[in-house]
Image: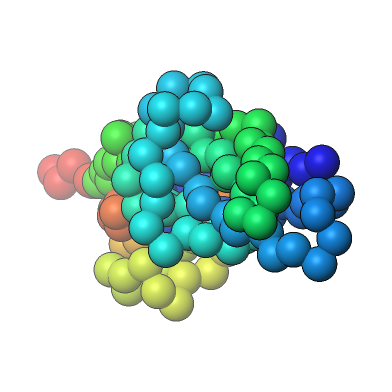
Length: 196
């Protein structure tokens, strides 16, 4: 009898995966179990490709190549000729997240309407969460988190003259690494005054 590995998991490229672990009971007493793990592009526990060196009850799948593979293990007892094959374990590696649309800065008169800062993400696993930052320097380090600015868009204030830089950090609940947007400059200037 074989106790199966985790049935399915999906992670971002290069993120940590759960090990595939099986345990076997029964068979010939005092006989050693021999393991061989296989990968398959089809959801079948036969016809797969043997994985070199994958010869224990635990296997860590590759997390560098995107796509879906199915893993299974064949467990044998050579003394008795007994053999058991696990069910498949589906592993999907998705491309890491990136920002398809970056925030665009603007120059605006005091108390005018600045261009809404917006980001659009692509790929990644899980639901993205957002935190916007303001900075006195043109940098994505050392900024201050803006209270309540936790959406994919942010409307910067324009009630103070000067230049402020904005960026957003995006996190994913599916194990992907955080990503940062480009910096967007918002320059607020005094309204022009007509001379006589």
